[in-house]
Image 1 (spheres, rainbow, N blue to C red):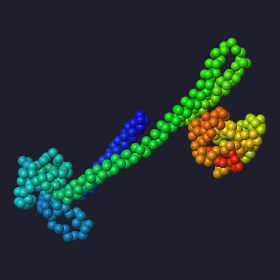
Image 2: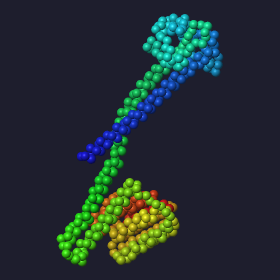
Image 3: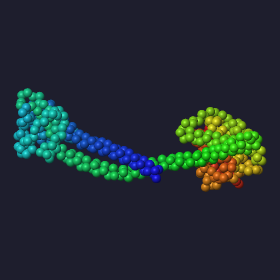
Image 4: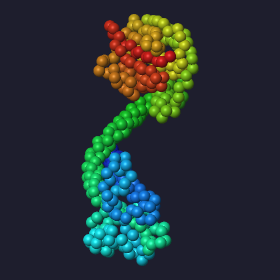
Amino acid sequence: MFKRKIFRHQQLKFMILNLLAFTFIFTIFGVIIFNQVQSTLFSKTDTELLSFRENMADHPEGDIKSPLPQKPSGPLNERQNNPNPRIMIVHWNKDGQILNKDEIGTVFYENYLQDYKLDKTNIDKITMTVIDGLYNFRYILYKDTNENDNIAYKQLLINVDAEQTILNNFGKLIIICSAIFIVLSISASYILSKKMMQPIIQSWNKQTEFVENASHELRTPLTIIQNKLELLLTAPQEKIASKFENIALSLAETRRLSKLTSDLLTLARADSAETQVVKQPFQVDSFIQNICIPYQEIAESQDKYFCLNLNCDIQMEADEVRIHQLLVILLDNALKYTGEHDSIGVKTYLEDQKVVLEVSDTGIGIKEENRKQIFDRFYREDKARTRESGGVGLGLSIAQWIVEQHNGTIKALPNQPKGTIFKVKLPK
C-alpha cells in the first residue's frame, strides 16, 4: 500500500511537470507566431508611412497636399514610388489644433477627429491608435521644420482595420488551439508519466527482490556458522579433532559467504558504474590455455573429459582480470552441472571480425523457457541442485556484465545431444 502511494505521488509529479512543460512550450510558440504575424501584417503599412514621410521631406514647399493622390497610370515599377492612398495627413499647431480641416474633409473631421487629441509622447515613432473607439490607425508624428507656416507637427495616419481584424481573428484562433493543445497535453502527460514510471517500478522491484534474495543467501551461512560455533562453546574442553566436522563446515560456509559478498560487491559497483575495465592487449589462445590448465586437472579427477580447441592466435584488447573472471564462471558452471564421463569443451575462433569464445558441456542443460532468465540475479533453474553445489545465481549476472563492459554479447545455446553452449563474442 505504501509502495503504491509513493508510485502514485511520483507519477502525479511527473504528470504535472510534463503538463507545465507542454503549456510553456505552447505558450511560447503561440506568442512567437502571433508576434511574427503582427509584424508581417503591419510591416507594409509602416514602410508606407516612412516612405511617405521621406517623400514629404523632399517637398518642403508642400507639393504633397492631397490625402488621396491621383491614381498612378505608369508601369508597375513606376507606381511603386507613389504613396499609399489610405494615408491621411493631419497638420497640428502648437496648441494641439488641426489646421487642415478642409483637406481632411469636413464630414470626416466632425465625425471622427473633432475630439481627437494630440499626443506628443511618441514623436518620430510609429504608434497604434483607435479613433472613435472603432477605427484602428497607425501613425507617425514628427515636428515640422518649416518656420514660414503655423504647422508645429505633422501626423501621417493610415487605416489598418483590415489588418487588425485579421490579427484579432488569428489571436482567437491561437487561444482556441492552445486550449485544445493543453487539454491534449493532459492526456499526453498522463501517458508519458506512466511510461516514465515503468523503469522506476522495474528498478524498485528488482532492488526489492535483490535485497530479499541477498538477505536470504546471507542468512543461511550465517545461521550455520552461528549454530556450529554455539555447539563448540558447549564443549570447551574437547579437542579440535573431535569437532573437526563442525569446524570444517563453518569454514566452508565462511568461504561461501566471502564469495557471495564479493559477488554482491561486484554487482553493486557495476550498477553504480564505479568499476571500470582496464583494456590491454594480450594473446587470446595462450591466455585461455593458461586459465584452463587447472580445470583440465579437476575434470580428469572427476572422470570428465576436457577438450581445448583454440583457433584464435591473435591479440585482442580487453581487461585480462575480467576475462579471466568470465572464463572461471563459465568453467565452474560446466563442472558443477556435468557428471562422470561428461565432456567439457573450450573453443575459440574468429567470426565477423570478432573473437568468439565457446564453453560447452554435455551436462544437464538448460530448459528452453529458462534460457532468457539465467542471466537474472539470484535466478536458479534447479534451486535444490544449485544449493548442493554452492551456487547462488550471481555468476552468470557477473559474466553478462563483464561481456557488456567489453561491448560484446553472451548467449546460452543448446548443445546436441545434451548440455549447454555459452557463446561469448567480443570485439578485437
